[in-house]
Image (cartoon, rainbow, N blue to C red):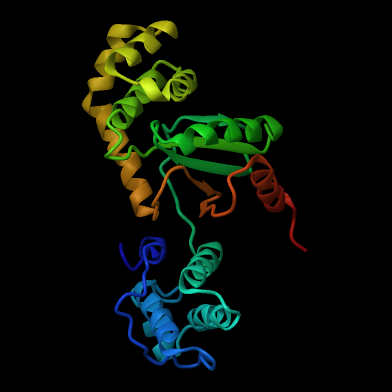
Length: 274
């Protein structure tokens, strides 16, 4: 899995201990040894788009994949432009994800809203105790309202371990989903993010008119617990490193999470290329 998902390796890349090694076919003129070493280290961690069993570095050495060589050359150009190591890392990751990595998710029973089968599929991974996820809730809602016939949004659970109520909240939302009330529960949880508790989830279920006994049973069921774990593992496998993370038509979205930025991105995807 490490070599097949560049997002996991590259998003966590640092240049610590990197040693300068030649990159055949890549112009490194003007780069200092630390920059060449950092670029070499990065290329060793990413999967080659031409042969995922090999690293980018191995494909560059073999001169067997123009795309791998092009990616390293892009990184070298960014160093020459004066970018620091972290800036180059981010730029290389973005270019790779944009051009070579598409993720597929299990969406059959995933809560969704918006268009029934929109041309734009957004998969959101979120944690119910994450403040940025609470902010994203309103942004996503505005996007769906602005483009109701084009956008379908799916919500995946990604509870973070140090958020004590995040995993129970995920189970509460999925238990409500079994009674057709995921989104109202989703909204109540985010609106009361600072005061979540086991009793609060029951209070929310009562407020929403759910069968509370069924809700409590579903919330504690193996099936719901397994669904939370399955969602979370999908996020891990897709290189997720923070919440909220959006995948738009299978590609990790790395730009600003504002309504205007998302609208512009979606409109770009809907515009036919010439």
